Amino acid sequence: MVYQNIFGAVIASLLGFAFLYRLRGKKAARAIVKTDQNGNCLKSSENGICEAKISTSTDIIIVGAGVVGSALAYTLGKEGRRVHVIERDLAEPDRIVGELLQPGGYLKLIELGLEDCVSEIDAQRVFGYALYKDGKSTKLPYPLENFHPDVAGRSFHHGRFIQRMRQKASSLPNVRLEQGTVTSLIEEKGTIKGVQYKSKGGDLELTAHAPLTIVCDGCYSNLRRSLCDPKVDIPSCFVGLVLENCQLPYTNYGHVILADPSPILFYPISSTEIRCLVDVPGQKVPSISGGEMAHYLKTKVAPQVPPEMYATFMAATDKGNIKSMPNRSMPAAPHPTPGALLMGDAVNMRHPLTGGGMTVALSDIVVLRNLLRPLHNLNDAPALCKYLESFYTLRKPVASTINTLAGALYKVFCASPDPARKEMRQACFDYLNLGGVFSNGPLAILSGLNPRPLSLVLHFFAVAVYAVGRLLIPFPSPKRMWVGARLILGASGIIFPIINSEGVRQMFFPVTVLSYYRAPPVN
Image (cartoon, rainbow, N blue to C red; front, top):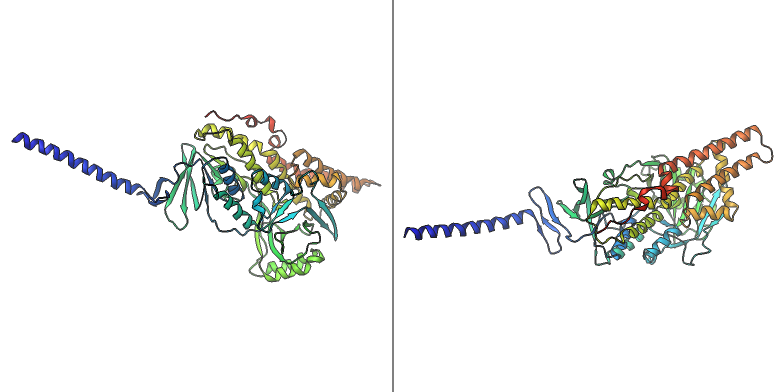
């Protein structure tokens, strides 16, 4: 009898222990994470962090769904990658830049299969520029003779273009577009494992994990500091207006007025609207809400606007829908980090005067796509990081050429009391007015059709030599010789610091950089 009681007690104890263990496991599981049928976190752990991987089969996380993020998501998704895109705001953006795509950028758009994103948004074809100075103008067409008739620049509402690309990306079954704010990168032993973020309307910190996280959250990036050395310069601000039912003097051309103190831009963004961008030097602009900006536009800018657009410019100013944004430039200085990559304005910016930003972005996507193509497995973070160092080298010649042109051209186009700078500005206008190779060469660089660093330097100093030649012919007086010498020094002082910040070897001699030859890691 005693043995039976002992045996029964043992059996009861074992059953009770099993029941308590199972009950504790269920409670713990519920306390750690609860997800819905789509894998979204509904309940967090005790520390407030959702430890579930929102997608357990994500190859690449993309932070940001602007031009770079959207186009990259579609490109990588089409390559078979499982992509999770997290964007702070999926509503249609309203910006006054990112509205002009150069012909070179349109060619990249075609290469990525995204050319239909400029259809059905009332985008306008752009065939070149009209340059104005002191009441004179010259027409500068893009050198498009050797390209398909469809190849030209495109101008449009920025937000419409972005929404079309987002729709294109989300149409792929392996691309997930989610609205949320990324708060930080998840780092373990120096390797980025994913991101922490808050979904729209939620207070919980969610996590998403992937072998590769690509940060392209734009010029206001809050993640770049751990991945690069950001040295942001703000030389000026753009003030934007929309002119309605206005006819440009040169149809389907961008218009650049070499005004005082700095350039004014006009280009179509729809069949009935013209974008006007007024460059204001410095980091501060007159108050818009207080009326000082409207007064500045009417008294300082309006008298320099071509007569054909004066009335609509004044009407747009009176309407009051005036916006402004700072113009940033920042050379690429990334820190190679396992598990992460920086792209777009998060790593590299240039003055938007030449409209080259989207061309650089789309060119970068092509480079990255080609690098990732031979890789079937992205899980070896150190090997992948070493291999992707080549991305920053391979992108340099194109990106640096467009960056350098933007910075140098802005400085040349700004008014200055210095006689040497004045002469350089006038010589640039007259040089482009010569036509032939003197306009086709610079326009091929500006349009992204021939972004070669050496061509840029040759044409830049050809303008300087042309200016000096005009000073010395027919009678080289000491004063003219002095101005000519200062002009050459001034030209060197403009372009060489920009080239130096971009990197001379990477820009002109990328084949001498070891990362240029990186082979794909063996999976």
